[in-house]
Image 1 (tube, rainbow, N blue to C red):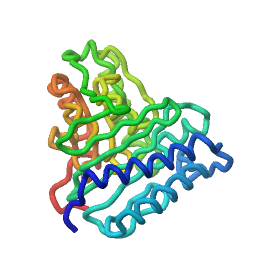
Image 2 (cartoon, rainbow, N blue to C red):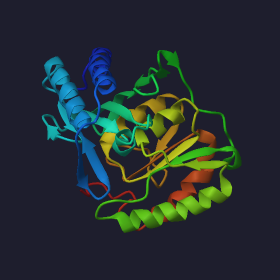
Image 3 (tube, rainbow, N blue to C red):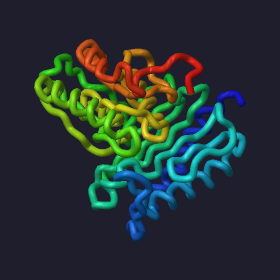
Image 4 (spheres, rainbow, N blue to C red):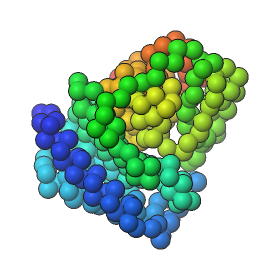
Length: 275
């Protein structure tokens, strides 16, 4: 299907996020289930996903949907993608560092993103070509130009079947960054890291592995705020990317070469047509 009207889509997304935030703030996680190696899901994750899926299907059932907890349905080229609670482990422990991230993807690129940080009281959004906003105010990336002044967010160490590879990559990069950057932070939520790059709280965010529900919304918000959002080899990021590097432009020259640690692993960009 052709790309939907983005103004109408943003209104639909904001209203769906309104429902999700209200639910997250007014309900407690009463049921926590392990869904893999060191990964959990709560009753709030599932309820938020159901709320948003139902709301958006009523808006335009022709647009597909991909949710972290309930999978995909509908159009595979133009679809909403949702992480109902990114940072579920944080959330289940009572930490406010978690986010609800909703993106609209067309031809492997996010066109729109809305990320709510309900327990910190902020909401971020962007539409391609229209800039990025936090609570209605325009935002831009930081002006940090040197690594020794940079605060960098980095993904968690590994879990699941490829944990050992990701552990090694994270360890290698962690050691390099710790010796050169002003600070390295592991927040446990990529969606939050990306919008914090957008508003200048962080100067860069690095993720080994890329799942669209974690990154689609934040990628468009960061990009519209002036960040470079790249794959491990420095090529433009898309939903097919294997890694995510969001950075102020001035730091890209220092950070992209460090991503070489992922070369010859499953986290390096694959040739076109590779599943």
